[in-house]
Image (tube, rainbow, N blue to C red):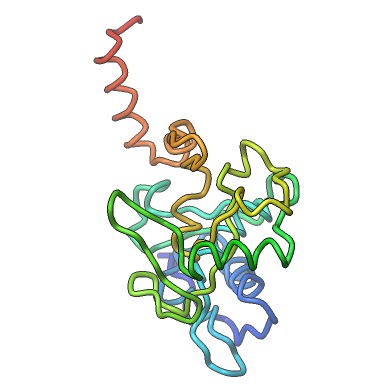
Length: 215
């Protein structure tokens, strides 16, 4: 029987975390990779430093480079914290992301007291650069986030601090394009699109009950 588990064929010595993870997936097309393997591959090969926000780099391979990387949300046989790149094909990606300039980014960090701005109800993240992420592991590196999701409006003014917020890597991934911080509305379509087939069917059945089967 064919072994469906990924193997670390490194050492992976690419300079960036994203490039090391990309090389690992391309070496293991169609095979199941674990969270532990991704952290090992992403770890700096020279210093041995644990990766900064490897999950954000994983998200960038999907959104910025157009790879398909499946998780348990997309493929029933995958478990939580398991991933698979089924092939090396790349989709056309969105336009290049705008980033705040250096002065704007300093203002944004100061406004948010150099902490991750993510909140859920009354709970705030508050992680700072260099902290250890208690959930995702690795050291935190705050990065600029569009308050208005990139998929809705990519060309946000890089000189306007009010349009940006700092997020840790884990919450960058969680947000994706799911939430519009300026209007306070969930981007429900994006959430449903990213859900598993089972979850999509649950949504479909719910909507049929809600509206009546128009059939």
